[in-house]
Every structure is written in C-alpha cells, then in structure tokens.
Length: 462
Image (cartoon, rainbow, N blue to C red; front, side):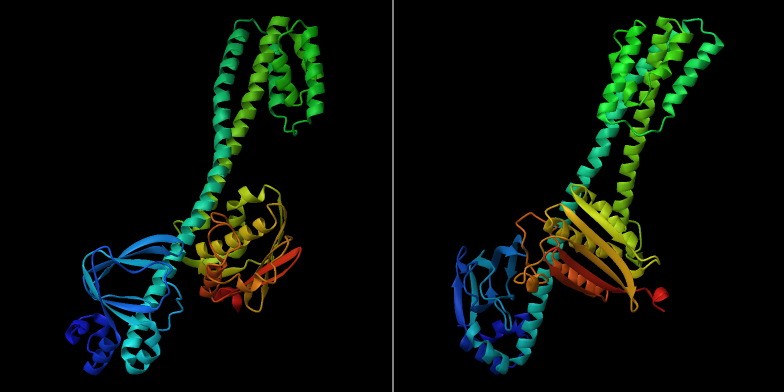
C-alpha cells in the first residue's frame, strides 16, 4: 500500500493537501517491476501517467529522428501528461532495477484537472520542459544534417581547385627541368645580342598573349601547321611542342623569324625554352586561379557562419544572399540559371546573420530540388513599408494543393531520408518570426515564390 508520505516526497506532489494526495492514490494502480520488466513499449497507446516511487527505469526510443536512451530516477513522473496530444508512447520504458511505481490512467485527467489544479499546473510545466528538450534535439539534428549536407558540397568545391593546383605544381616541376636544360644548351652557344633579343622577344610575346584558347578544330589545324613548319626545318620529333604552342594560339609564321636568325640546333633549344616558358606561365595562372578560388570559398564560409563576428549585427541582405549562393554553387552549377534583381540601396537588417543564411539555404535548396537541379532560380530584394522583402522563386512544378497547407508543420517533409539540408520549413518560419518577420508562399506550376519580410534596421527604417 502506498503511503501519502511517499508521494509527498515526489517534487511535483510536494506540499499538496492530504485529501488530494489520498484521492490520487485511490485512483492509481501500484506497479511492482522487476529488473528487465517493461512498463510501456514504444508504440503502445499513451493511456497512463507513471510516478516512480522506488528504483530506476530506462527509456529508449526515437525522439526528433534520433535514437535516445535516458534514465528515469526515483521521484520522476513519466508517461503521458495532462493536455498532451500524444496518442502512442514514443519510447519504451523498462526497469533497470527492481522498482515500484503508481500508474494513473489518462482517462481520469479531466477529474485530475478539477480536483488537483496545482498538480495540473506543475505537470503542464513538466510537459513544457519536455517540449523544449524535444525541440532542442530536433534543432540540433537539423543543424547537424544541414552542416553535413553543406560540408559534403563544400568539400567537393574545395577539392576541385585544390586538385588542379596540385596537378599544376607537379607539372611545374617537370617543366622547370625542361627550361633548365634548354637554358644550359643555349648558354653553351655563342649567341649574339641580336639573337638573344629575338629569342626573348618571341618568348615574351607568347607569354603575354591573353587571348582565349582556340576551339578544338582551330587548335588541330594550328598544331598541324606548326608541326609541318618544324619538320621543314629538320625538327621531326617536336610534335608535343607543336601541340603546346597550338593550344596557346601561336601562329606558325611567328616562328619563322627564329629559324631565320638561328641555326637548326640553336633554334630547337630556343623553341624548347620558349614552349616551357609559355607552359610555366599557364601553370602559374592555373595555380593562382585555383588558390584564389579556395581563398574565396573559405571567405564565403566565414561570412556564411559569421565566424569572428558579433552574433547580432546589421546584415546586408544582398551580401547574405550572395554568400549563400556561393556556398550552394556546387548544386547551382549543374544546370540552374540564377536571375538576380537586387534593390539599388543597401538593405540592412539587425539580425543573427548565420540564422538568416540558414533561411536562404533551405529555400534555395528546396527550389533546386523542386526543379530537379535544372531550371531558373529568381532572387529579388526590394524595400516596402519599412521592411526588406526577399523573394526567392523557381520555375519548377510547384507545390500541390494537398502539400501546401502542411509545409510549415514540424517534421513534415516530402523528401526521402538523407535528402535535403535537414532544415525544415518550420524551423525557417521560427527563425523568421524570431527576427520579427513573416514568410509566405505562392505557388502554381512553373512559378513558386517564397517571400520573406524582415524589418529594416532602425538606421534605414526612418
């Protein structure tokens, strides 16, 4: 038999009147559990509240998409609580030690609310704590999923220029050896000042050429003509050199002066040196371009996360959108054309910058997926009634009338497991509301538009 004093030692029952405690005990069933026994199983109807009087229980199940295990100690209340909308237990509860508990049926919650209002108030507070914890777990899962998705894309984006720079540096080592050998060969020859000047002039003119590379057909023709010219001067094994010069758009006639000023062997050494110099210039340009791309991506990541910056500040909305587009470039470049229509005046919003970037990331990512990775993405900003309006649209199939009412609901998704950024539109809506803004969507086949309205910073709203 459960004593009143036992229940009064449970924090939520502390200081309650004796008659209320007596009523609660009279309506409850005393449970004796041996270690390993289950009090509830995941998926069972949520039909009771449990008060643990002795022992220790363990809960295990899925919360916010994560498998969790937690301990329920003596004096805790578990199970379904008043005003909860839970219909089935989301976790299973088993006894870790021999335990004793009270089971109060959920069917008597209306009576509980009337007879024990103070307990009801405390239990509602307990349920609020549960909701906050579940929400925290969900947001943490969303952030981790979003981070994982973006990290995979950024790793690919960083790997491309890094690999290009590595290949170019390896080739540079080989080419430097060529130019060293050719320079030694020329150094052994007694060249006049005029001959040296001709070699240097030709070398400089080829290196400084900034023309775009010719198309494949033109390159093939140039290679054939250069090779023919070289063969006519006894150079029958310089086909690779001919190919390298052709890709640089070098005209055969530009080489004639070299053979006029030098004998065949000296001209050969000069050509090898010139071709190596041209290749070195190209390799250095490739390394510079690749490392610049890496640097730009790292800067974009810092701006996206607002690393080393104040958490709350005036954020330039256009810059925020552009940073997000840079981060998502790995998905955009597969076939999405971005159309920009930005307001001419800077639009600043006092905000948690990294959170706004999460909003743009989710909406843009959804648009890309809706278009199947190919289509037209429209990004527009303008000022309206003291607010900045960000409109992100796509020409995908649109949101069906059945799905549209549910897109901002927690845990709602039309994507498969592991797809998307992991950040739901319900979280997007919470972020927008946190910034005192609103979000709405209009959709029809070929034209879906998300509009986010955010109040301008005080310096601009006047």
